[in-house]
Length: 480
Image (cartoon, rainbow, N blue to C red):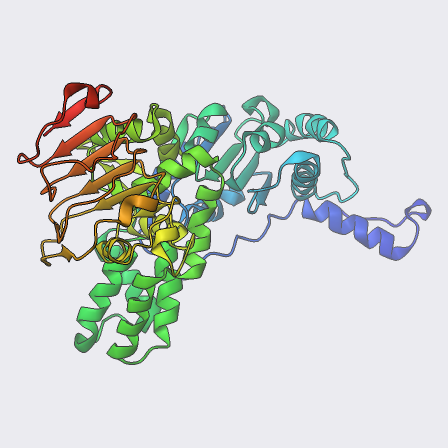
């Protein structure tokens, strides 16, 4: 074993001891990262990531991206993989929650953490991004290292911390977790793993443990337990948070009360975590996401693109692709739009919070109850851009109104109504309309002051009296 000898030049004893600690820290492997004791549904995915890392090969440097929606377990999966292989490297570093650390100050902070953890020398302090790049390039080449960059959201973070495989010693491995697959693509990370939702059995197992901490669910709780399971829909974050909340509830009535409240207003902690990806979007992309969350879940992609094109006046294909890259929505094998129930709830809650107590002050209306209230009480405003009133097979809805409700909706672009009866025909329709689909339209005629100049899609009941052709000179789809 190597021994240390105190020389005069080493100064005081405490300085010598500090030197020993720094040297030893470069030899002794770091502690494993802390992860939950009870893990469900990770083993197969862990093996997939290990296969991508190909740790047994020392001839190359590999970067692997782990991506997926917020709360799906990216960090836990990456940490579990990290713990299983960290002892095979000369040095390691876990950069926690990189998101938001941008600009010179944020990047320099990350570079200094990396240099300190890998080389165990606190005296290495860079003061500029370029200085940090130079230090990393020179020093990392000398070691086989394992890095985990968690929750990356900007390309600059990768370019200035792990720019290219050539920075690292042979056999090094870099794992990157992110919600945004486009960040990985633009950095050239070809080895990628998309984290999967828990299946029904896995979600059942984890929720059972979080709520009862036993191997079985009491038969009397089975129905309400399955209700909670349906609401959570396989998202580990939701199981962790809601399960912990339900753990203290000892009666079925208490469970139902909690779930009823979540149905009205989403859990705030889950809402804020899922909303991070939404906050990263520019306004145009936020608008398209809110449209999809409020109206188009489960609809065919081509149909949605056609409606959005008519509503906004331009193509939204790129917007949809960005939402996919941000892990906010998916396209099913049948070419339908899908998104997790809790992400749908998050989008609807953003719109509800525009005006919690006055639906007529919101940008979008989709709830039959809210729409009927606005129409019957004449509380609509120019803030409403879209109304889509679906057919509710369980109810025979009748709108008892005076026909004046659309008069103040001067910026309404899309109006879709189906399966609802009206006590009177509309006395006004907004001239701002670009899309008008009204099945069982309660009249043979349009209001006399309805002169839409931007109408693109118009579908009405067969009894409607067709106006002259030049009335629809812009319409590309008509069904009258």
